[in-house]
Image (cartoon, rainbow, N blue to C red; front, side, top):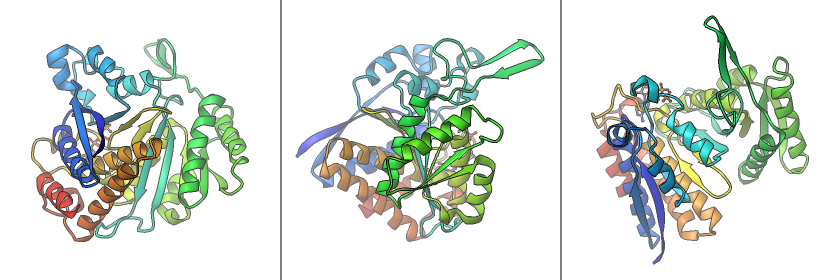
Length: 353
Ligand code: ATP
């Protein structure tokens, strides 16, 4: 038996308390089969933390998170919080405090799921610490402000250092995939900010002669993802563009309920599905758990790569294979046109392991 994985778990709001335990049970089984255990610690987060601690991300949760390299985090539903606790959003607080600068969001069509764009298999590498995200792009204060009640301004931040580190993530990922990076920008309009982003990515690309590089404007990229997604592999872009393109890519691959994501720094990673709290379906055992199950697979794989742990890498592969097997078999939750409950789907994935 090798050292167990230690994961901090934040269930979150809405469907979080349904899909997060589902993902944990799958990961526990997969790791167990590789002779590795799973130790989890649950921390207060979201609406329940407002009730118990007066804040969606209590100070005690942030302190405890610092002791963990691996986190599994459910969605938050800030729209349901009291007005004075809605900003900054919990995810932003955590990403900023721990500098989780890289957000990896894969979207892939899989057998058994009707994808709008059948050939899609992309990895969106989203810069997560600056751009137009007003809640994290300033050391003090917010990047959005209103000089008068009728005038609103927003400051976008792009730095060479942050662009360089996200570009390295993208080119390294491309080497592990199909060797192609597309840099997405809007340098015909946002010439200085997204122009710097594009230029720094291209400079980093020169260090990767084995990786093919091209560039696209973000609007063209949205159209091209619909028309010929099969031509793209890794897409690297700034924060806001990455957020929008990854929801689009997720839907094109079948459903937002399938889309996983990993946020990481050099020494820490947080798995969190792309989707939100889905309050419209919460508490009914109908949510698709795949996004969170696949997110924990990314987390376990990240750990395997960081610590050269073959058992973790095997467990991650086994989780992905089990999900693919169950989907290919035709079992589907309501978002995919089926009638399987969250519990039934999770049990099928666990059995497939
Ligand atoms: P956020 O802004 O927090 O990302 P959102 O407003 O984009 O949230 P979601 O909560 O992601 O919205 O929900 C968008 C739609 O997708 C809703 O109809 C929701 O029911 C559906 N949805 C989201 N996640 C899932 C899931 N895991 N399974 C099934 N349906 C889902």
